[in-house]
Image (cartoon, rainbow, N blue to C red; front, side):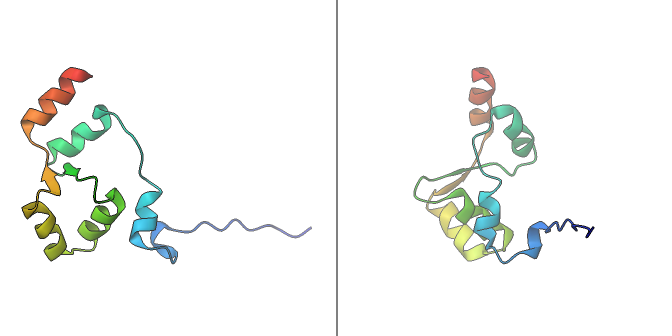
Length: 91
């Protein structure tokens, strides 16, 4: 009887684009999940004209010019304490 070897791929070991990899981990989450990211200063609003995957890929690939442009145009906005308080009160 031949053994069936299990083959597990690492996240970075396939030929998928960064956007495709990030799409696997996108979805709706509650404030409890996001709170820690806010506390670490890494939570942003993403304009509906952009996708989370596009923004995530640009950040992870250090596309500084693209991210800076989005920040200047307010297509990407860092979450501030006022937003966090509102979400905290809704939970």
